[in-house]
Image 1 (cartoon, rainbow, N blue to C red):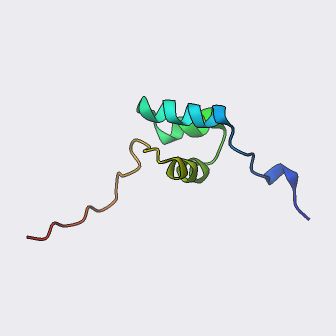
Image 2 (image 1 turned 90 degrees about the vertical axis):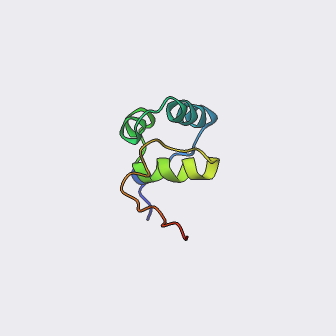
Length: 68
């Protein structure tokens, strides 16, 4: 049986607009989770689907070495 309490809400156009606006304004992923009331993984996935860059999410990832 599924528990409706844990069912993910669909993304609305307003949610997408807010995600874009916060990303363009340089807001953190943590703030986005609070404003959108969604988990970080959900926000990252939606941003990837829409081609939106989230500030600060590249921190800690290794950069590829250049070949000479």
